[in-house]
Length: 201
Length: 221
Image (cartoon, rainbow over all chains, first blue to last red):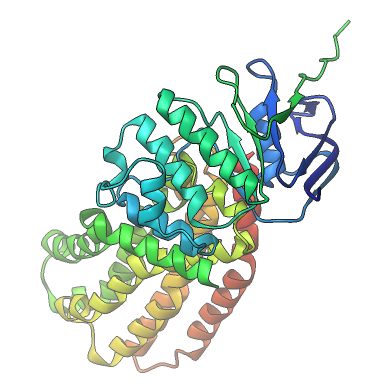
């Protein structure tokens, strides 16, 4: 198995204090990683760090493939239609084999291509965000709470997309605290622990 | 390059879809051009004397109007942090965004400046210098404004910090530009003023995209 992303002893500091304990993580092709931890333990921060949005305070981080990050924010333009949003992502990140209409159909939004993204429900916006992962080939997926605001069918859809992505030689790291992914390939888990605060005597 | 183009085209499409908001700079320019003569009196001599200053102040304030929306909507809907996941250095995307700001706020003002000049009895021999000064000067306004917008991204919407940061930096542009147009009206040489503006433009083009990228990164964290 080839490592697509390798992080060793990474930390991130906010106002001079570590957010979480130094973390080691290797994302191998075809393997999923579930990041667990209580609220405020730094799961989102770790994912943003792995994505390259934040710079680690110490430790090393190596990515050998293009990365996609799906966060709490939808990263969509409400004024643009669903298809325009996806077309933009394909042009911005480089187009893949799946065009916008097919990607919409894959996430269960077939026929909504001309609807402005702001007119979608929260769950549909999540689905559109997932479609954004499909329109341009990026082997490393970093998903922050991908199951949030999705119904049961939506959660199964995420699992199906993840299985397909892993089978194509991609890798995924996701954070979750309610729904655990059910993948044919299984997954490794990573527990994020908040850094111990120095007690003031 | 294709990512820069994709961002530019999407920004322009959003600007068209926002229609009314995008026309604000132009409406603002003509509001000033029409209202000030009503206030100071319609005498051609007086208007001709204050025309360069009026057009330039209007252009400056018009460019300031749209600054609040330069990075903030992207910051709020999460599209800004996606810039760090592209295959292009973020500086390239900053340049693309500043270019779209200039195309939406600067270019319409330049295109309609001859009409505004005519309405204010600007001497015909200074029109070409006015146009050149706007052509050099409005990109500087977009660049400096963009840096201020990036720096103030972490503050509340409508923060007074933005204009306070911008004004001292654009004062030289205003002085050299109106100086050049006034000099042209008196048939005096204008090269020194325009040359200094060009120097400011080169300085801003070189430094602002890098500085704005650093400021965005700070605010993303």
